[in-house]
Image 1 (spheres, rainbow, N blue to C red):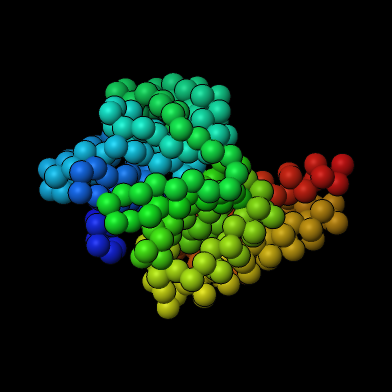
Image 2: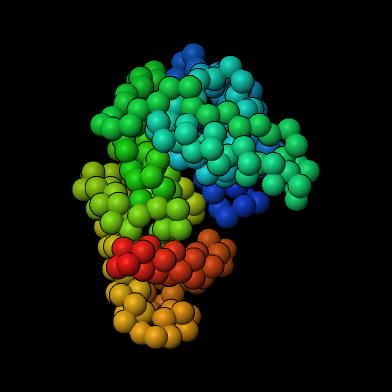
Length: 278
């Protein structure tokens, strides 16, 4: 697991095991706020040990940026903490999280100790604020990757934990392309120092404008390609020929997973737009 101090009392963690997924912590004098967990128990426990032993405080709150397993299945390892998320995050974890976990346990024995813990405290619109020592955390809705997406702004430092609303390559399989575009544009207007992506490396202030533009251009290119496919009889064959590079992204992102995500984006958006046209 990778770890980095982003600003005073703000830390970033990145998995070495699964898809460069990230999490974070904001530390106060008496307790800390975790932002997401990691995909597998060992790395989540490493984060908890670092916070409790090296930083010397317990975790009082865990914020889930969305319900997906690699961000929320570690909730159970913070038994004394209050979990916070979007109201839809709570519903989706209960509806989909438990069945998914049962299937995953059959393939990975490391998940036997995991149980789904949905958010105890939720909101569905606007913002929620937490005060952690001298830091003001603003939780705001950020859909697109999923309908329950939220992001967490460390207001004083202008550091945004964006969850999967911002990634090296946007992912639409469980989301909505127009919401994704709106959330990315919103991030670009926030005047940030750093973006903590849900997967991948930290984006620094001088890189943010280019990253926002690249993601918006990618989504526009994917939409254009899918619209072109809808006008063809050989739609699936046509989409298979649309390369990630044509859409402005590199296949080396996320340790080579970007190409897989790109293919899934094309298929998912094609299904969504086909249903709309029908």
